[in-house]
Amino acid sequence: MSTPGKLYGVGLGPGDPNLMTVAAVKAIAAADVIAYHSARHGRSIARSIAAEHIREDHVEERLMYPLTVETTDHPGGYRGALNDFYEEASERLAAHLDAGRTVAVLAEGDPLFYGSYQHMHKRLAHRYDTEVIPGVTSVSAAAARLGEPLCEAEEVLTIVPGTLPEEELTARLAGTDSAVVMKLGRTFPAVKRALERAGRLEDARYVERATMAGERTGRLVDVDPESVPYFSVAVLPSRIDQEPPVRERGEVVVVGTGPAGARWLTPESRGVLQNADDLVGYTTYLDRVPVLRPGQRRHGSDNKVESERAEFALDLASRGRRVAVVSGGDPGVFAMATAVLEVASEPAYSDVPVRVVPGVTAANAAAAAAGAPLGHDYATISLSDRLKPWDVIAQRLRAAAEADLVLALYNPGSKSRTHQVAAARDLLLELRAPQTPVVVARDVGGPEESVRVVTLKTLDPSEVDMRTLLLIGSSQTQAVERADGRTITWTPRRYG
Image (cartoon, rainbow, N blue to C red; front, side):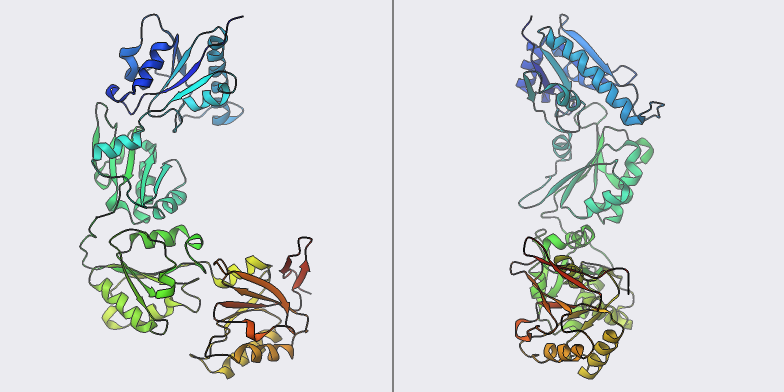
């Protein structure tokens, strides 16, 4: 029996034969069989790139796709038809390898980057001696042809296929620094809409057939959708050193960052922060925002100047700046959205665009860490009596307790407010059983996270500070100690 041949996955680069690597040329020269994929018209871009290196004595294997985007009556649908094709194609190559022939499978760009070769690789690499020759990707080629850096310093590059659902594209593009969207063609209108919704359309560049005949580059917003082929990409280049555009009117977006920083940011929140010229907020919350891009201005202030902070942000926006007002948790829950909207309603700022982007609330974060104590009806109450009298707070606590609602208690205590937790506990003990589960959640998501389950009777006010949130169970809330020693809580969805 013959010694099996060797399999090469040969990356050819983006199209210009001069961008083939020396290793790629050597692999083709060493091969007995040259294989390449093609559509049903029979032409192969991969073969055309490597044409000058293919000899007359090479055996050529054209792996012709049975379909590209059209429908099929295959019982397994589109994926089933392609899977059968890959199985048949890989066995054709396996026959050559078993006969001792060396096989080079040609691949545009890089063999393992959105390439057809990878389907052969997954089926053959574990059976035969295999070597993959990397190639210059279309991503690198596009950036080179644009002459603009893709990413710099701590910027994050995201590469996505245009075939993703539009909502997913929007989220991905909103939450990154730089991006390349592959596989345009018929997806171009959806990609363009996603870029616009992500606030990045003006930054976007377009590259068609990079390094190949018919190359075209320019601003994506100027491209006719009917003219876009499959071999084109959208590029969001690095924004470092970019000057913000001059605008007649900016906007204010109040952003919820979640309870503890970067990992709690939603894609939409991250996108707003990425796109802002100025970040405004309580210094503690601003410090939770990751370093997003150079050139952004940060304006920190004390926690007790919400109206002044809102007015400052609106004034910046009135002068053409895009401003993100940073709020912990959700901006509409005891946070900055109300302050901004109140000032924005004044005649001086009535024409400044304002919107609110939600975030993960402290109550939801604490509940998830403890189990599901908010699984049924609940009330959210702030124990701070700086903006409303304690009599009102006590009245609301009593009403919620009499309605048998789970309670999420915000702002329970601080250095200057020490009596509220004890007063609330004593009031609730008049209406709730002493064994009612209480979740004491401190710094959820942060480095000092502590989540404990105690009873209403044993709740110790001295252990509660401004970074703590309390969840007081209803008559139905359960607390169970698990085998791992952790106590979990939940409130059944059925009542009674």
